[in-house]
Image 1 (cartoon, rainbow, N blue to C red):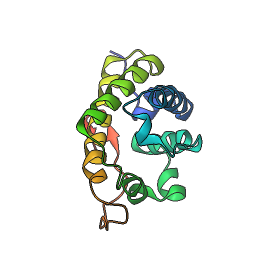
Image 2: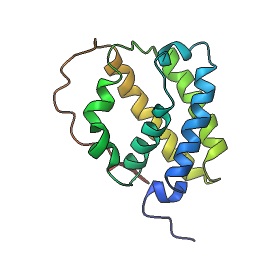
Image 3: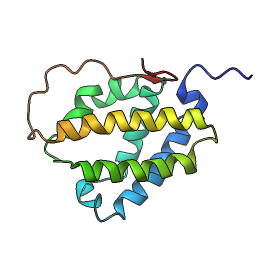
Image 4: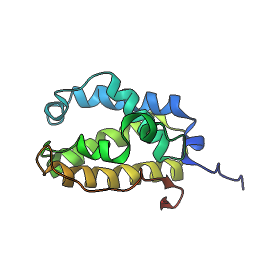
Length: 151
């Protein structure tokens, strides 16, 4: 049996693959009648920010924390969006399709990545119910996700 790379980011193929994943995903989201309204303020820089976030979560550099505000900033970005469970599930469908298209053909890798998205979108939906400006307290550092889930 071949030994797995230490991080999911390495197994994925690096930040460029995450950029492709984000681009493929957001193309579908912006064309989706259920999700497009949630992303009314979408800009192309969002794709890069998502790739940098995922790179950090999956074991890479701490660029999101160092340059873009870390876990607190990510959570604050979801305040007031009022994401429904129907929207979250559609988000998961589109992301799963993007994962299948853009990530290496490795069942365990894809499963772990999709598990992260399921976990993360559940938190995003919960946070989105609170109004903008809500004090979130200290959510702690950016989470890390590995071969066994949350590290």
